[in-house]
Structure formats: structure tokens, C-alpha cells
Image (cartoon, rainbow, N blue to C red; front, side, top):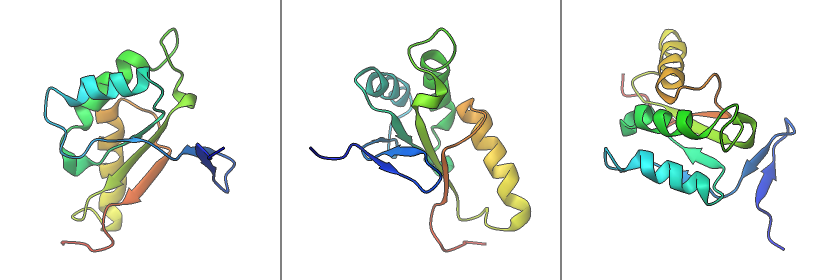
Length: 119
């Protein structure tokens, strides 16, 4: 049987298959996220530069939380820090904006989008 998740050194499980949201058209990504969650996806991959985290946040708010289909703990949400935000003083504000847009209190994984800063 193939593995469906990877055990991280923190003890958290990361689903190996997730929904990527790059190039998702406005007005479509919300429905895509809600459908993916309804059919069993538990990993959502986002990035601020994709310009759709607010819409993804709407989908998460409607689907995840007390009294809803899923609990936050059942999801693994990844986002990425964009290349113009690598300065130490820019990282936390960028993360806070992503969290606000996604309507989440935390991310499971926050990556540097590319290891090359533009500024």
C-alpha cells in the first residue's frame, strides 16, 4: 500500500497529495478548494503571489471550523513568502497578511517561494 502522508520530524503528518492553487482563476479557486476538501484532499498549497489567498480563505471559512465539515487540525496548509519579502523586517508582515487572507491562525508550512530575492 502506498503512503498517503509523510511523517515530519515534528510528529505532524503532511499529506503527499494536495491541491495546488497556482493559476487558479478568480471566481473558480473557492469552488475548487471546497470541492477538493469534500472529496478528501487535506493539503492546500497557496502563495501570496498567486493573488487568490483571500478567495481560498473564504472557502476555508465556509468548510473548516467548529460545527463544519472539517476541523483545522485535519488540514495541512502551505503558503510561500514572495521574493520581495526576504528582508527580515518584511517576513512577519507578509506572513500576517497571508494568515489574514486565508482566515487562519497558523500555517502548517511556510516556505520561501524561491531562494532568490528580487530586492
